[in-house]
Image: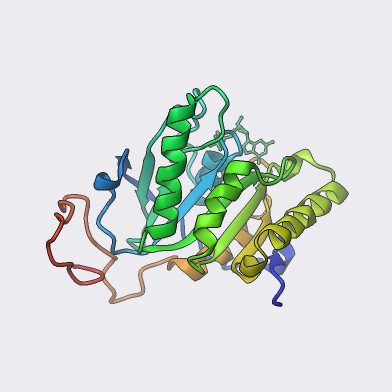
Length: 248
Ligand code: GDP
């Protein structure tokens, strides 16, 4: 069986690393299926339990202080925020889950919506799961992964807040996550890359960027138009023929 990997800073190039999330711009907020941008450009999704550090990770990787919103009311912001990357690819910031104070019905609704999105979104090319390295995978993390990994697409597991651990504990935490994935999702092991990360202490940024750059281009290759569609395009009504994969 192929082993999944823990990729540390030293394993990534010191210079010239791509920055696939730099120059991201807010595109739209989506509260239900019908509002999702028409599938087309490659899309990467960021998911994580409320307070895991997802917004901080996005902001750090995008090199912006307030691109993704850090919520004062964790778990209350129930929408997917879409950002357009410089290449035209999309970043979907999924709502944080698992916050105790959210009513059960709302939690279940979003758990279903997110599971459905991750399992069926045709333009999704990768999932970044942000996990607090001190706590490991939560039950809702596992529930989401179950649906996602069957698609065979790759996953970057950002084991964040590493700065809160001593260096030996950092290694142990990353290995514990690796073992957990291997035990819980043995068939998906090769899809997963674990990157020890800290937004505040800028650990793992290049390693994460190297993985993300395999999913979405860091730049538009010269001569290539950016991926489309634009936000002005109306969603395709049911029954209407699909356009080209990357409509221009
Ligand atoms: P989200 O709810 O998953 O989007 O989490 P946030 O990004 O809003 O972060 C939740 C809290 O954790 C905030 O107080 C952040 O400042 C803090 N935080 C996020 N990332 C890190 C990190 O890498 N290290 C430390 N020490 N704190 C972090």
